[in-house]
Length: 508
Figure (cartoon, rainbow, N blue to C red):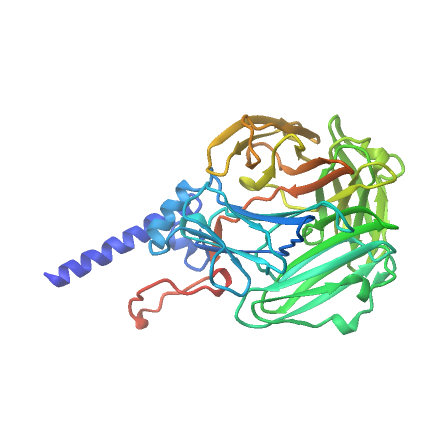
């Protein structure tokens, strides 16, 4: 009888595995055709690093938030229950190097937040597991009311990786860029910083190999490595282990603060890139392009505006010399309207847009958006500040030849809906939509869901009306990771039947 039960259990287990494979693999691809292919499974664990927990009493505060928003969970949760039923749903915010969470949650759609209110707080590690992991998004926003770092500075909390690109910072007089390298693993990481400026690759052999100790953070001051560079791009490449890289840029004119923000990671160099989220309003709009290869890049530039796509007069073609960073002023071309920029090049490039808000003289603020991938699923902005002093604008663009339909939904910290809107972006155009929660809330979650049509890019701008001038930050839209690739495995009947899943260090 026991043998019959054991055989029956094995049959049920095999059938369950086949059912899971049928749900996760494309139609028409069964086990026979995918035996030697990697398998894509629902994400069971996810880790994100928030780069800096700034706090100074009376002037600076940082808020960290994470959420696994709606619209992503049903099929993935079912897959998780079949494949890995032992992982309990959990979302933790924990200081780097410690084990005690600052804040926790155990269900999707509920915002988990932590307000940094003491100095020298370590960077926050966001970890998600079980049915909360797929699609989890985390971010931080820092508000500084006075001093050289006055302004809003917002950043997505990023997963560990091996390559990061940043474009658009500078070491010229008044500008200051800092690179934050964080290692959450239990082993030391080795990192190379490759710098490019207006003259070509920066000779900085002394910093080509940097050690980042396990469970620690290292900060690199760019004006010490490239003190005379007016335009800078930085490639962070991990040669051993993984890190999270982030870059903050701030600027002064004399003693007047003129902007601070995190420069988002740009897409890896390619021949066709889109930079979404050119901010509406007055102020400088500066496009920075790096061509890191050995050949001059001939770049065609198009603006995706409200009325359609066009090449600005005398700026439609830009040549970027090998290994250099070029800048293009687009103030007049964008005419204070929200827009996106499309670049097509004969050699790989990547780029970033710097949008400044405020008068030409006096206190003002900046925001950065970078070359990014189109949305492949829901994009979540975990926190947008509400109230009468804040205005939020959603900017969406498509470079394609088909209109894109999308939805934007707002919800409160408990996941309750605050309103939704259906949106249409016409081919080659950009739309700007003011976000207006249906209730008076001090913060809310935004979920943008592409529904059909061509590729979709976007960003959410946040503007605060302060007594001494405007403050601004931006969140470039990106779809959260919902699955992970399990490497190829081959059955070995001689090893017997295993009792659990094979560990995968890349996704743990």
